[in-house]
Length: 568
Image 1 (cartoon, rainbow, N blue to C red):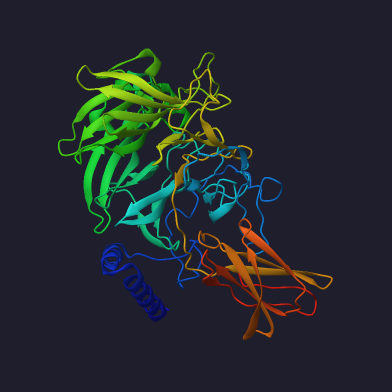
Image 2: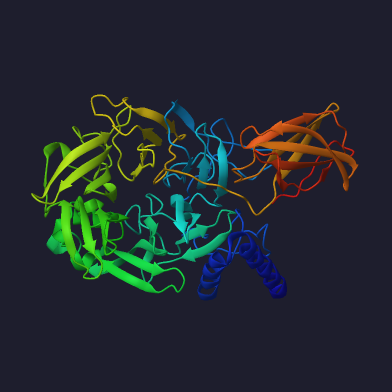
């Protein structure tokens, strides 16, 4: 088996050298040498369709609990089912608005549900188009496993897919940690454009990789958040004596060597008295106080500075990495800025820095308690203009949902290349796109060009619109059904963005097939009806130029009218 794996790896590296160039190959060699890289296909922890061994073991075993989380709902009108891919059941979304003016690109979400609710469809990473058709889906085997922060990033000049994977602490199943904390065993994944896993990344110094941020930098390092409970007497803050503080640390890791380049602990730099989260809430989660709840890391206009968001201190911090000093605080109890009354925020997520001292964020405005307090302002995307001369912050733009929402957790605001803004509404099951000017609380329908809704209690921590070209390493899938002399062939290719049509081949012998018809691709799965008797069938995926870019296996019709196909 080791000899076979070695031979397959040689084939893989030869392919990378010939197609992607020697420079990319050198980076992959470095990753492999230092991390024992394992490569696999979209069914990430089963034997790979491209390589022979199982892989990607981190984040694949749910953290154990005695609570019975409901099984996913994998049938019905709100879930996709496919003849050619019977093991894929992604959720169906409802597209409420889809107007001209949306930005190019596909939509990246990672649906999951809290532990008391049944998720519609399987959890996992999902790429959609504007009409809601799945483009790529990587299902997880348990409702107690989740992906978060799923998006397209750049590594060594090439687009990759990244996400966190593991068990997210959600009551009532998981109260051993504060809600939205990562359970042990989690990690981050990096996949290339063929959907092979090229790297797993974990946190260091005994910390657990956190769900909130995994950011690849222009220097090809990874900035990530991590957590660790630290024992502490919390009685001075109104908490239990035998308590813990859930410390959050920012880590930067060299992806070639796994060297820890930067480590910054919130507990070392932010006073616990700055927290708006009562220490008494620790008794609800194993005596662990979630005083900080860092939830984003962003780059700035200086290579030495980063921007972090701390939900439970209502503050955004600019940090200088070489000195580890906080340069300034925006919001919270020790804000260095005077913030205009219409620019105030609380319980925020996803702070990002832009040129000319502009900061965007998702303003949850909600909710320390399970119920939304009366008079709570609606959640919204918020863009602020900072003035570093007089240290003021003013509202530049806002983005509200129609209807207005109070979002208890999560959410993100993504600035798109065409000037539009894409928003994931976190704990509310929506994601939306807006023209640049935004809107107001009194007129939330203004400038909305796209809005979609997930089924039931499905959520996605963040939602992104990204450009992505997927060329799967595994072949297209095929299945056939027969009815009174008419055969219907079902063709799909999970993750292929370049397939525009399908060519059906048929014949009396598996090695002597002839073209029958070319049919345009329709959604994830295309049904091709023919009276051709076969009994052997095959499909070829064609791109926009009519070139063959993928070929399925050959399947046959048996005497009972049943068809079989070996699944990827």
